[in-house]
Length: 509
Ligand SMILES: [Zn+2]
Image 1 (tube, rainbow, N blue to C red):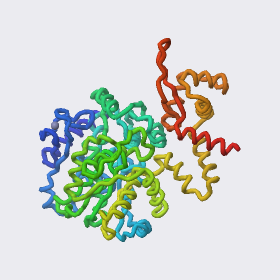
Image 2: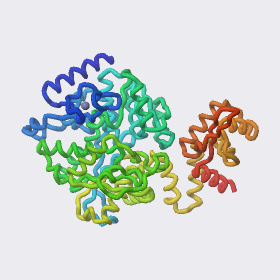
Image 3: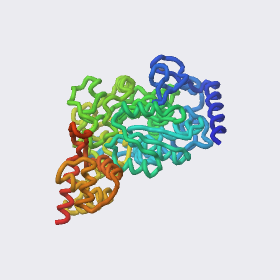
Image 4: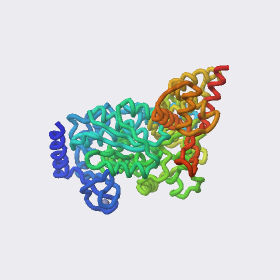
């Protein structure tokens, strides 16, 4: 089976290149990219790979012949895959572009639109890229897929791997949002923990050629997420808005929406020079905002970010290209506070009925600030891209719950039910032990046995601890060294862990 797909894939690539439909080149060394490495970059120089199409030829064709079908695959003529007979698809794309009524009114804008990407199969815009990259990988005969760091991308890759009958592995930070972790586990992916981006990249490279790695730089993935831009322009009858606002993590989405604008311009469908690409980052993790010459902010450790982790990236690979897109289009970028993001989640949900994840609602927070500082005019035609669903990040949901619910008592009761789903008796006992004193793994194991009468293996204790770390209830506090024995790691409760126990005691009272 796999070999038939591989043969078809190679034939397909050959035909497409032969017809000069596309050319794949490296933006680093400028050469035709012969080989793409595990991180999705040029294996000769580590540069970004770009796909070019013969747009000149398309220009002369009747416009109605360009796009057929539905969803992402409707835009095949501007995608690197032409075969649509059996894509690895879950029905991605085809999301609504909503004319904002109430939010627009609140912000004093009459022409605000929302591109609602929360309705994609796994709840995030990344599905648009995953369907293309996974179809390509399946066609090349790969049976195993790996992905790292981004919870949204890992969840998406896990889902599409399941759909294609392939195995998948996700390399994740301990701070991953719980609901994304649940998604990844549910789709059957193997999970490994990594400390940071460097370790994740080292592990992806070490996986070898048997495994196809998908990153936010993978060229076919990038081409897929470009369709957010094409689709919204088609929904606007090819009348470009004045401004498109997108949150920036790696910056890939903003960069690719701009590529879509340029391509649509080249084939004569729109006048792209009008669209100001505008990015939103988070205070303390805003390298693009800083590079654009806005004031330098106190840098924040990635692990200290509790919200909107998808956009808390300190060293995005494609910084230069993102800056280029913003500058070329006459756009800008702005950083917003966590507090403003929580307000934006609430505002968007209450005014428009869209429950977005913090990283997605950040665009609304950014727009609000840009209006206040008069960078954006109230009569502009603006599209805010809402990239993913709010059900992905229970931390905000819980915080929001306290603010949304009319009565604090009801909120605490509801919260208790939510948290009870997360924790079992053993984990609660571990939290109680750590409330009494910081302890190391073996000490916790003894405490469970002697004080709580829970007898489980030391390995299981560590498993529980790592899940509590992932939930941000427990953290590695310090290393205790002694000449007599091996160093040991002491665990303690995080502020969230303490709050959790406090709210539990409130309820029991
Ligand atoms: Zn190169």
